Length: 621
Image 1 (spheres, rainbow, N blue to C red):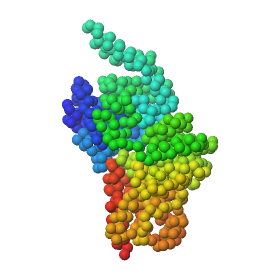
Image 2: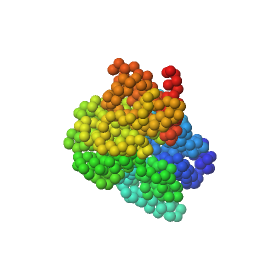
Image 3: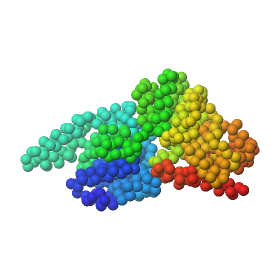
Image 4: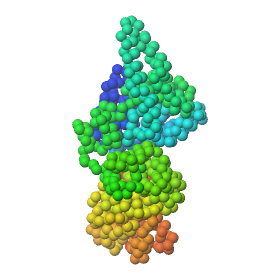
């Protein structure tokens, strides 16, 4: 049976075991070709091909529930669940999502995108099953990197202490996005038992098969008792103490062995953890040699593994370079990341100042509070984190940083719409940051402005959040300026008497282009770079309001709780009644794909902005 002939998990279950080797090759070839064209998560998906096939063969996907932690290893699952013909649209606008989505397939049990959530979700699904008197298995597939997140242990402790019938598959590939850190990683290294267990198992199996007549029966008997032998080599304490029956380690390349251990787990009426050893990037040498670089990758050349377009990691690299310059001048400067050293542009900082870079693993809450502790101790911490992941540290932002007025700077990467879709959009950051007491919120629109904002942040004795998109907006007007230290004043980028666009962050470029388009229609529309969101530049805002000029706010952000609403609230509180139009994201933004397509769909590209403003002007006549 060919991959193209598989339309459901039932087809996979019916395949002869001798066909599975060819199937794994076809799946890897399809994943490599698609990610090379569209970009996506490569190394993590290549490492779990056999594991996914074994799950689909051992469990009944028509009723059993499988939750994939993060979901950046779900591509094989998509291919085996009736989505093979759509797979070319992966991560494209209007196409298949890069993560599991319940609305996309009945085989996707839970929407994911952030790490360390699967065990909690599976515990909920298992409890729902029990309350409804149903009978099916619930499985959480969790990477070893996710175990650096505390939420996993909250869920393990709960499920184990309550003897909840569920299965956790630990996909141990020795990596998360950045190399794993901490005691958990060291413990898993111990559990892998080096090559001891796998080598002994292979030697005994090979020896038994060579014995005439009785060799094969002895070999089959060995397969039944090998778990007892395994206990000689591997002794688990951590998962056992949490109430889980530990099985493994099992070779993640051996589909038959995984099927057997999954079948064994299904017989146990208790929480089970199965330890599977996989290899990230398996089957593509460039991903095997450099799994970090090819974890989440843009389109690349299959022959060389190199990106099709040169990338400097955009604004992330700018932030990292500036932080290195600041650290050279100020010994108090330290950097913190939550398992995202390279993605947030801190690779160079880690090389230059290894003692001042703290990678805490997938533990955003801990990262924020530790930064507060560093600030209390007299350091100047910079926390480099994605907008979507900082949401997980909201309580710590308020309780541990803001209430103590501590000088922690948050370098908030990937602000705005993300190519990865709903779980990764950074479109709520202003909503949950701008009302925090004492928090200065800045939106950088250019490389020059980002650097200047970072230098400004270290002059303050209070918390600062600097938000910026991944893209490098080097063509923005502010890059022509020399900004040694940022001044929290809105800057006039383009004059106009008919209306003024107050644009914040990465929308300045669209605002300026829209202004040119409006001029062709006979409308002179000014543009201000409103980089400082909290506090507002009240002096400039009052000047514009007293002139009576119509105002348009423009943001790559949810309108509810965003920049526009803050302007509207200021006007209401101070007795102004301007003609005000707010442009931003309405409702829930679920699309993935190229930023340009997403802006167009939201009516936030330059052409649509110009059309909307001109129509609004005509209505107001």
